[in-house]
Length: 99
Image 1 (cartoon, helix red, strand yellow):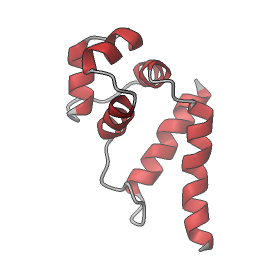
Image 2 (cartoon, helix red, strand yellow):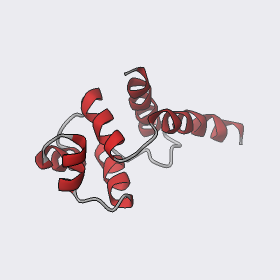
Image 3 (cartoon, one colour):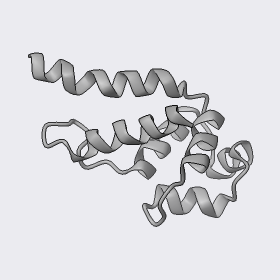
Image 4 (cartoon, one colour):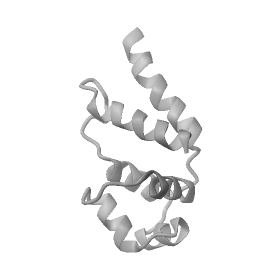
């Protein structure tokens, strides 16, 4: 669960950073991007993540907050390495600061 909280914090710090390339993205847009890249429909992702299709639709539409447990299930269903993604998100702001 610590990885998930760290991931959410990393994503949130990117989202609120004024120089972030994804500063206007929301969690739902990030999930949608991974879903589309994985060639999954909302229904397929919902089945894999053990949530309803309506939940995926609401998340992607930005109409609901995502709990750590739901977020973890969705990222795992998408095959996302949560630890690696967290590391990459943490490194990006540091890399830009050095440039």
